[in-house]
Image 1: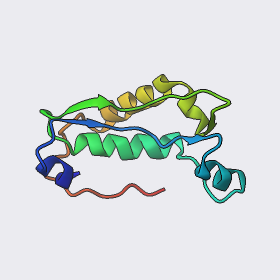
Image 2: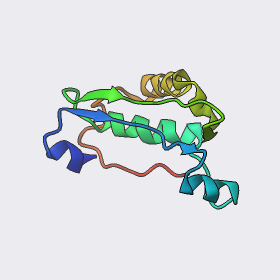
Image 3: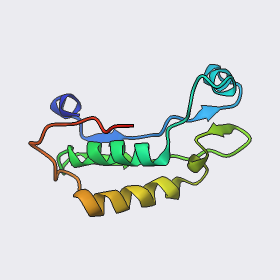
Length: 110
């Protein structure tokens, strides 16, 4: 995250990876070789990214949605508010944007 911020960005968009029908990833998912990201994992990873971002950097997007039958996984992405509500809870509990500046980034465990 530090490298991204050091480039001088003014804004960031976060988007959970969608596995969609007809894609190469869909074939891997259907064969059991690929999983969609779990809501808890996305919440912690995105939450920590936000906490390590200076307040002057704008987040233009923190979640996204798609609908079945196009969306195969993760199904929690059918409603963008699901991810946004969980991120709000996480940030209220662990600290808001910029609250982790100056602390080392530790990749959350899966």
